[in-house]
Length: 223
Image 1 (cartoon, one colour):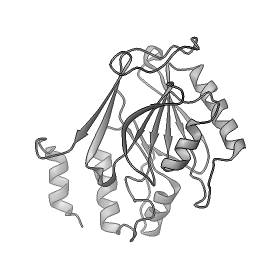
Image 2 (tube, helix red, strand yellow):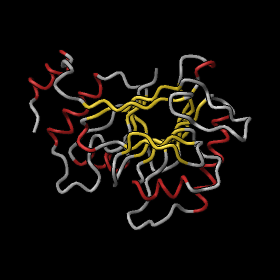
Image 3 (cartoon, one colour):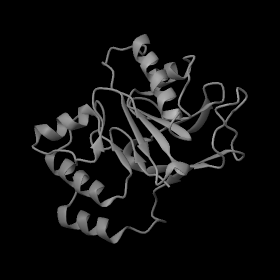
């Protein structure tokens, strides 16, 4: 099992007001308690932290360039993770050169892993543009930024599962890979309940608070 956290969990993109130091300090300590395998902290969030004198944990990744990571306990369960760099606000379409780099990165990770997951801070429209590119495309695209949330859309001619985070951190997506994608077959497609399953969990009162997290919230308070 891998636990991944996408961009803008620490500072909402284009929020009416920037997060306070108190909130960022709490979020940083809270995420240190979580057992994430990878936390994507965008340059926007890093800048918000730096402005109030905070710095991301050394294991939190993300920058203004394309990043490739390999995760998993052993070669039999290796997963490639591709972090997409943020684009300027006025961007209406992903630059062709960046799309070429993404395609090459997918090929590189695919040669070393069973599954390629891309994590994007681009927002709905630009992610949709990516999924219309000829590819190769990532097997899973985890999106964030401006736009609606998605429980799970099978896009990219059936070869990419597209999930987008919902606002306010009140839900969590779970993806079960029932069978590794067959990249040797031109006919491969994701099919729900056959080779993949998507579940959205609403974080309601039916879930008991983690005692360590509850203690942190009580000691620090939230705003």
